[in-house]
Amino acid sequence: MNLPYQPSQIAAISSLLGEKRASGYGRKFSSGEVNEPIASAPPEVRQIIDRVLQLEKEKMYQKNPRNIKDDILIIIKETIPQ
Image 1 (cartoon, rainbow, N blue to C red):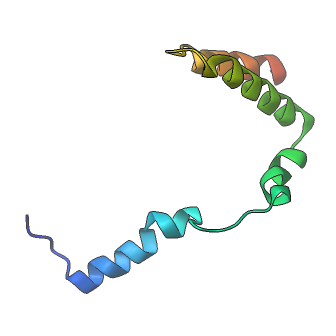
Image 2: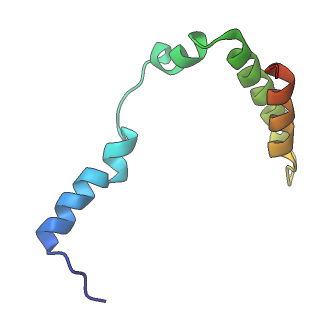
């Protein structure tokens, strides 16, 4: 396989799009920074997050958890009025 890019171009593209750069790899987060989006969310969103976390805890110990997507969709439909 012959790539149309020079090694220097590949290195530049890799550094721009690499996972370590995009994900904040190695960055230290404080607990307030992690919880801030949840704390500042509207009540409906917090309720959805709480219910989904509870659902995940319940299904975590199942050997093959099923229908979690359907359960999350039901939670969202119940919480957000049409």
